[in-house]
Length: 405
Image (cartoon, rainbow, N blue to C red):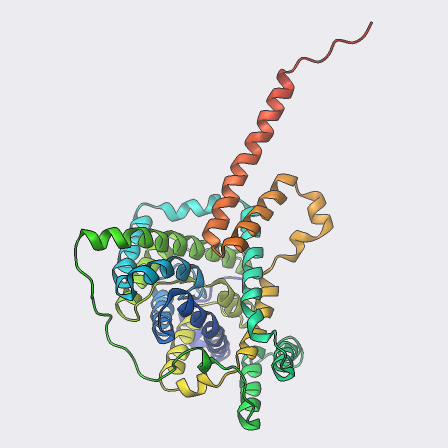
């Protein structure tokens, strides 16, 4: 399936409608993860939501992978959080600006092209770990003693899975969100909603103010965090781009993606105040559930998210978290590579590849950091063949025992 040009999208009402609807469900899928990002990073939810609008919109034009969703992501929050808790939110802006510069330098040096050398077993481990992390992030939202929360969660899954069989024109996750939100609002049920996670007041913030000294001490505080943001964000974005390449059978420009992410992070730091990277779960929502294939889908996602954060903030605040959790659980199941665990696959694959996949999954799930998991997988991939070659060499050099007379 080839990438669809913007011109052909504008000429076809049906294609344009499909891309816009894909963007709508992607925007809704972004909300719970972006809010959880805020908690990890120690910032206000509104900050992360506005930064996500800036990231998603700017990467729609600057990115090298059409239909890939970029926003404030949990993996980046993990490296920002410790700095914020020790030194305060004022240091986020300089750290994000420096991270953006590093990512642009990566692109200029052509380092993004190295992603093609990541082994398939590491990629499979990355995808499986991501599916597990997405699933467990949703558990608190539906694992409840309240029968209504469990019922809403189950109803969401049923609608999302069953509706496409009878109606393909409107994405089923969008129908689930609208119907079940209307049900909870009109029936007067009190349930955990998006509004309970943080303030959803309307309006837009101004430019992020520079509040720290411009000196070497600030540089000493921010450079470890900036380097981590740059590496983690870039690795997750390029791995996601590679995954979407495989899903859609289309190429992407990894160098452009790297440079675009650097610029987008700098823009988000200045207006919104936080960094981000590609979000694989929401990208799966866009590409697999919504069938988004062009930049129009991510532009729509950014504009819908902006509308929800500003004019429709009160409406967004009423969406039950159990409904969004139901959508993301299906995303987790779709993300996981089930064939990799089939007995026939495990029997056919060489054991070092299976070991590398399991190490990648284990390291990612235990740390919650995708970059660490991928790095562990690559190191294991390098160690295992080396050990096998060493054993083969020792076996060849060991003289065979003389036959008995």
